[in-house]
Image (spheres, rainbow, N blue to C red):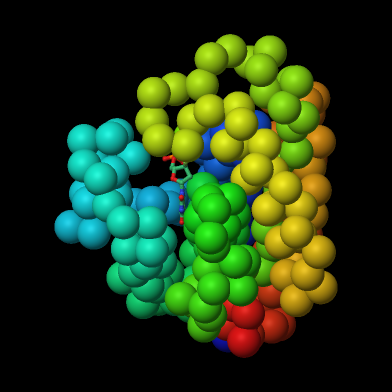
Length: 212
Ligand code: FDM
Ligand code: MG
């Protein structure tokens, strides 16, 4: 029997859309159906680079904007070999944020183009499916206050949403928009169904390279 590769599945969206909840539920659903699946997240705050990022996000340190963008990217590159290995071994990876957050958040800052922001991401493992959890700013506001970390303001999140809209206009990436305003169970079963379909489909396809 040939070993079937796992799928690289990414969840993206603005803050409060429910990404982390849905990533956890998806991993559980896949595992319960007997498919090997693991959760990953970016930033991965436990590495040396991740600790620099975490301290920046918590406003315990300041970093120059280009520098922090490249650190977020380096944090993905340092985990890329492990991701490839797990995918090859047949494990599906469910990833909470990826390069798209990287580009959307930095390019929402003044003086940064989407094109510049994409460059360090070129060649990373390409997701087989990117689900964008869509929630309007009004609905996000109903879910309560933003946290205390950097970027957690409604004005910045609005700018980020616009950048995501721009990024989703890209036929080289398998974007699927998920209506995140529905209740948790509905969103979850929708996401699980789409994931099972892609897990089935990628078995016969090699892993791609992002934006290359
Ligand atoms: N973020 C996340 C970036 O600015 N660039 C990136 O590449 C990634 C992956 O970090 F504000 C931002 C997005 C968010 C913060 O918060 C991470 P969470 O709650 O740990 O996802
Ligand atoms: Mg957050």
